[in-house]
Length: 85
Image (tube, rainbow, N blue to C red):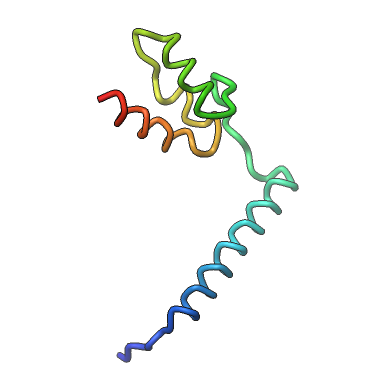
């Protein structure tokens, strides 16, 4: 077994290629309607609307109700949780 020495430029090129390929496959699936979306219970566009919704539900809000609202909703929920605690 040999260990190959990889330069940072080679590694960066591979990562860029892999990410581009992943995006291409996602776009092909999306355009051909092979990728189904799970609709969120609440139509949210960003963190501001998420904060308004959280304030509206004083008794609490289930994560499953908003987890598919927009791509970075889970990261935003984690940030809000850190700020609240």
